[in-house]
Image (cartoon, rainbow, N blue to C red; front, top):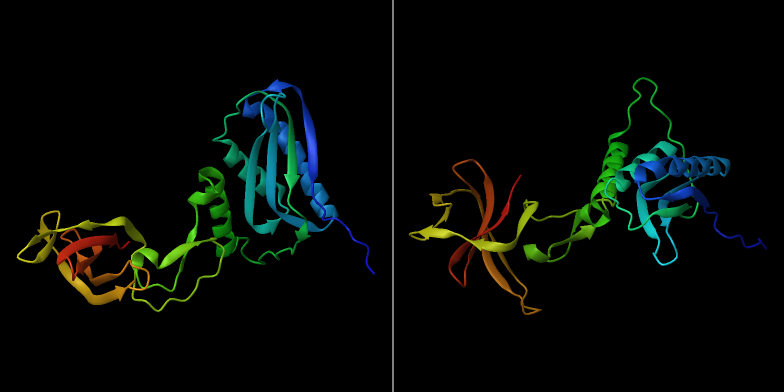
Length: 253
């Protein structure tokens, strides 16, 4: 039988020479911990996909934690420093820090990517992961996500949030605008024809009839059209067959 072994993790604490509140003065100590982490990962031939940086204050002040999630397992110290620097740009410590702690997630198997022989350039997928991680570090994890279709014909309920790195699911529905309004906006009319900002629209697609929701009490009965404005903006509009009114529901890119 194999002996049980706990998951390997990095956990290192650094006392500061004095109580410091300015992030810029603490960065050199953070970089030292990141360098130690990188050495340990190479020693174990491993990588990580999460990091937690903790600022420890005086007794009565709870610690300040910054959590980072990576989209792929990595052991690149420069990558860790870049994401931490981006995250620290919008951090204001509630009190001076007495010490800092850097903790990692469990060590995971790491596969080294072979560099290109002719052109030393990151693959598009790797560039996209780097962009997503940077945006999440700057804007927050909840602000950056992708969409996955859901088996529901109603546009408001036909998608859900997903991790950006998740594989895209197939969808047989006609083209949908990425930008849906929180609530459909009522359009003006002239002789039963919809108007946008007081001007007539040109229909370029449709109708697509959607009747669904009877099973949960939120049923709809709409005819959707793709329309173009005088300024060549593409809109997704529908005619509510019950209310007999026109609504704007989204914008195509």
